Image 1 (cartoon, rainbow, N blue to C red):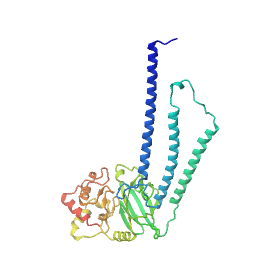
Image 2: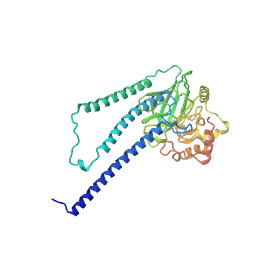
Image 3: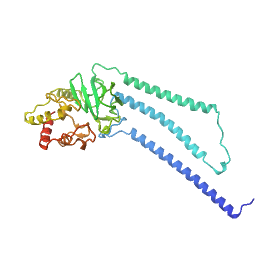
Image 4: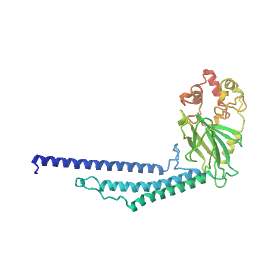
Length: 370
């Protein structure tokens, strides 16, 4: 049956529209693949780039401790294997999209059937098994090296207790209790002084994570977990709680100050001293001791023996307050006493409701606690 001129015109128009649709789909797929590949390359470049010395954001790709280095090398090994897998799958996908795209001539044809191919089934069974076995063995080796490391006699032992929403650090052998800012010595080959931490929780689940020094370790109520680090370079290393623990989880920050042996010993001697007793600020001490401050905080040498909040004996030796949420300045200290929610909404620190005169007196007293 012959087509009329109008029918031929409509058929050509339909064929052209179909080709246009096919090319549109092809271009869209190719664009999506290129965007995905560009994003992966960008992410890989950011991961392998050397962070700036002044970059305040901690990076697992700039380790400064043996556990962090082991995790870093394992991560690179896993990323290399997964990159090879991605490129193989990406290449095959690109080839299939281009080579076997929908064509009008293939509308009534079926592709070659490979069902029951022993070679193909062996390939997609054996190769993934080998990959999983290699990754398992590499990961198990790193876990064993970190978790079963021997504790030398020169190690520093610290108990870290997670609270909502701050950190408490106790040095049992040194008689020191501090908060939020952890001080540890450099551990070099000539003088290995690793730091072993016992991790406890006072309320809910927390997670101790300083990316440049060690991996994440959870703090779980009624359970004792342990971790260790041996920082090899002095400096300030930032971390935080890595387990959602409530309203102010994101501001449950911590600072690890890695000190030279001499600086660490000087810090220990200063922390072992009793609280400063400044006779000129006796009025501020009276305000502190006659209000609810003593119910939560401890100050050595006073009747303040609370344990619900940070120990304030050497408050002004810390660079931050509110678990790293604000710099330790007189303005922030005053605001923290008057209205804690202005700095850390949802924190468990109550507004003290003191008069302006008592607040000023109290701030001056706290500033003597060095």
